[in-house]
Length: 100
Image (cartoon, rainbow, N blue to C red; front, side, top):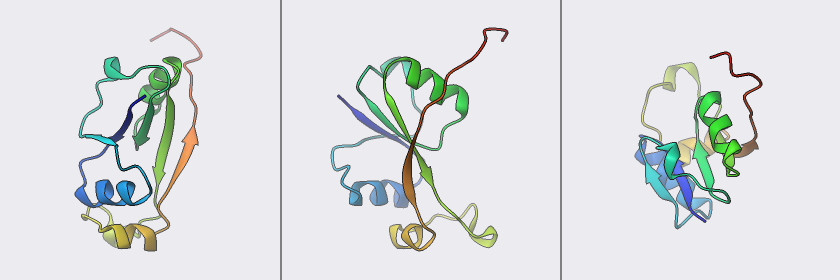
């Protein structure tokens, strides 16, 4: 089993490791062909990728954060992430049809 964290932010990587995910594999872009059943994926991914991850039998945890408007786009520290209520919430998704 592998745990992936998908992020471009160093502060977020540090925050996730502080949550007990010491052995997390940090990637800035997830190649879903690497994801296997039993893996865990952490991040803020689009629903189409979440569905693909879940279809493979992996679990997805979304990084939630209530970032104030004036801080959006800024690099946050782990302490700021805690201040803004950062958390990991498990979600599942599936594609309903194949119409494209």
